Length: 190
Ligand code: SF4
Image (tube, rainbow, N blue to C red):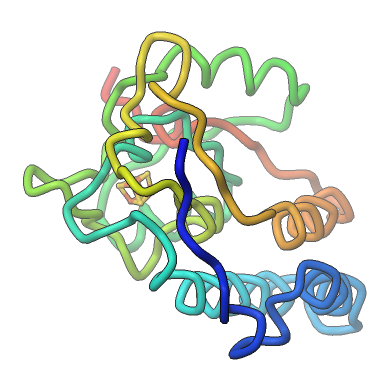
């Protein structure tokens, strides 16, 4: 696996240093702002991360391999997609993480319900956090093609947990826990 060259990224964007990024995300997570405001701030941080990384990734418009992977989202993210798309969502109650992961694995290789025929996301501006963070630092975008047991080749990525973990911790801190399930389960047609 050859991978993209990240030289110059940290010179231009010192805030992208993983420790600095994690501290920034933790500051948001632990701030006194409302839950909704903190969620939105983490989404903005994910977008900033995505913009800075974009010149170094294999990701291009129309490439949609990652939209065939199990995409796990929270109830509030599904609600946003329901408003943006006008589609009815299923109510998924909070449950064990293992149950969500096991159920989501069954849709591996199935296109996301919001993937358009031209390979573009039909809800791009409202897409969940996990979609904003996902990327590949490999040279070949086809390395992300999904096989029966995951991607066809190992895919190198920047450490997105520095933002994703504070996001999960923020969600776990809610008094009323939300459902967390694959986007397919929230928007199944059965
Ligand atoms: S919401 Fe959009 S970006 Fe995310 S998996 Fe679906 S089609 Fe892809």
